[in-house]
Every structure is written in C-alpha cells, then in structure tokens.
Length: 327
Length: 221
Image (cartoon, rainbow over all chains, first blue to last red; front, top):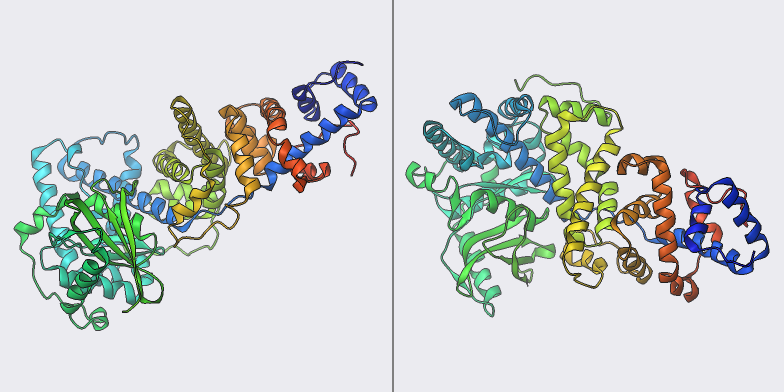
C-alpha cells in the first residue's frame, strides 16, 4: 500500500479498463491515500477542462468555400460524363463510378442548363482525343457566349437556384458585365447560398500599395459610369453587345494570367458570401495580382489583393484594405 | 425534364440524401454537408487547431466523400462515415505536420484571422483556457488527441468514437486514459488558477458511454 498509483493506471482504472485484481488493489489504495484520491479528482478535472473548450460553429467563409468546391466537383464530374458520352474519350481517371457522373450530367442538363457556377470549367489535360478537345472547345465557347448575353436570364429561369437568386446580385452581375466589355466571360460565385455572377476586368492597371484605395475607388467609378441603367436591367436583360467568338474562346480556359477555374474559385473564396463589386486581373506593385472588391456594410467595401496562386482552395492574399461607404 | 418535380419532403434522412446524390441529384450532397457541417467543423478544428488547416482538411474530406459516396455500404450511419473521412483527413495532416518542425504557438486566434472580419466570429475562440487546453492537447500523440477530441471535448459516446476511428471501444478508452494522464501535469496550472471545475463536472459525459470508475468511490456527487 506504500506505492502510489501511476496517473495512467488511475486513468485506466477510471475507464474500467483494468483487470479485477488491479481494480481491487487501486480501490483499496484510494480508500486510504488522500494524495492518490486527489489525483483521481484531478483526472476528472482534465475531462471537464477539455469539455469546457466550446465547439465553434463553422465560419461562413469556410462553408462558402467548401460549397464552392462541391459545386465545382459536381460540374467537373458532369463534364467528364459529357466528354465520355460525346467524344468517346474514355473513362475518366479517378472516377471509378461513371454511373454517378452520368447522373450528375443528366441532372445538370435538365435542371441547371447553363446556370451552374463551375460548368464552364474545362479540364483540358484529361482529354485524350484531339477531336474531343476541339468539340469541347467549341462547347466551352458556346456556353461562355450564352452566358455573356443571357447569363442571368437563364439563371433566373433555371428553376431552383434561379428562384433564390433575386434582384440585387443579378443586377450587379449584369452591370459589371456591361462595363467589362463584350469579350469578358461571365463567371459565377456563390453568395450566401445563391449563385451570383461577375465579369472580371483586365485593365492592366498597376495598383500601388499607397494608392490602392484611390485607384480602386476610381476604377469603381469608371465601371459605374459605363453601366446601363442599373437595377432596371434585371427586369429585362437584353443582349447589348454580341461578343466575338474568337476572343471569347481565348477566355474559355483563362483570363489574363488566371485560369478561369481558379479565378472563379478564388472569387468565391474571397467573397465569402458577400457581393462582388469588382474583379480586376491586373498588377500590384508591378507583380501579377487580382484585385477583388467585395461590398461591405453601409455602402463601404473591402479590397483584397491576391496573387496568381489564388484559387478555390487557397487565398494567396497579398494585401487588403477598406473603402469607406460613400456609395 | 424540368417539369418532373419530386414532392419535397423537408427532412429526408441522411442515407436518402446520399442515395439521391449517387443517383445524380446535384443538391443532395450539399444538403448533407450543410446539415452536419458544424459538427464536422468542430472535429476538424479541434483536431488540427489551425482553422486554415481544418478548412483544408474538411474540404478534402468532403470532396473525397462526394466521390466515394457510391461505395458507402450502409454498415454504419452516414454521419459516422462522414466523421471517419474527416478524422482521417485531419490525422493525415496532423502526422504530416508532426514530421515537419513545429511552427510553435497556438492558432486559436486564427479563427478571427480566418473570419477576416466578415464571417461569423467565434465568440469563444479567444478564451485563454481554451488556448491552453488546445496547447496541452497538441503535445499528445495524434491517436490520443483524436480520441480525446471526440470523447472528452465533443462528448461523443465511446462506441461512436470507436466506429469513427475504426478501433475497438477498449482501445478508445485506453487512448483517452493515457492522454488524460499525460495532460494531468500540463493542465495543473489551470485547475489551480481557480477556474477549476469540481471533479463532478467530469460526469458531463455520463450521457454518453463514458463512465467514470465504477464503484471507485471517486464520485462525490
């Protein structure tokens, strides 16, 4: 009875994890040893301390990001199935279950038309047949053009996702698209569970650290000036500038130095459920960077400068700033 | 066939959502994710401590589950299956991190950084006790951490934790026991600091299968 109980033995005893002889010995020791009894209580305290660290809820930003990744994955599988079906390009690597992919494709075609966010992402390296590649290229262009002209109209009429994507985000999407010129792709991101759209600029501006907010402000002004009557656009979206197919095809897989796939993921990630007001694939301090402006409270906005490594899974955040609310 | 509308039932069970996903319903998996995201997040962020890591691991896990849904056989509950994929993704990262030199410091405060001032701030993230507890937990081997996170921190029954971790309930108990014993000296200052919960607080987990010593006379309540 002189030897005290080791902490681990006591902890296992508390779990009922010891044999009957050891259990009996420890019980007897505890009865006569205040020191080991105290340790027994302390062990209970460990569990209580661990339990006292509360489980946090998932931050919105993480929710948005993972949902975007799932959307992209669904689109990727749908495309894989399309390629397999149309071009006979064969079985997709890493896709053991073509049944599911085909199902996803069917569902996408029937319910989501051109409305789904990741649907424009093309995974060219996975294509094997040059014929299929060409066919897919054309398809990509078609989707991008359709998106440019009718993007929001189709989104709004494509059932479930459209019915929840109401007024404001649609208007913003149209406005930015108009300002960005006819050849820019319309990309989608998730905003508070809805699908919203943005059109990236590529102004070639070299943003400077010290002048960031003023440069962004003036670019926002410029984009606003070139908007057609803002909110009304939503009610009757009209094709106001037909994009040239040739240049649109350039944007099918990349925009500036950003892959469209990554740009979409990046904007979704950075927007974190907020409304995107500006995306400019440009330069910052002379280096490649994308400027993303997300609407904030009270008319203000936050400016994020991200590097070329930004994607759905990584921010590559270089700098950020706030714009005061002044409209 | 946009006209074909299935009568919406408000709360389809997990297994049904997973079946719909496998059949090609593009929203089913997302629903499943939204339903369980907070619990999965708690497991990930408590296992990995760094919210960025946790977000990466959770994203990997969800994509993996999304792809592997067809191989789900229904031997366990969908939630258990999801948890297992998340825990494994976290443990992979934890072990990879352990192989690298420690960055030092606890990233509890990174929850705020991650939120970038817009997402929901975690009101409890800055608690000093939580930071200290997490720091102490980090000193344990990964398998003990994982067991303690599930059983002691998040209150999962031992049987559930065993299924999630793919080990026997006895092994869960012994990992928890060894982990608690190792934490004992590291958390001593917290208990002495006056924030010490009474020993009876350990019985919080009585709702699960975690029973304190049977007949040990150590239960003063």
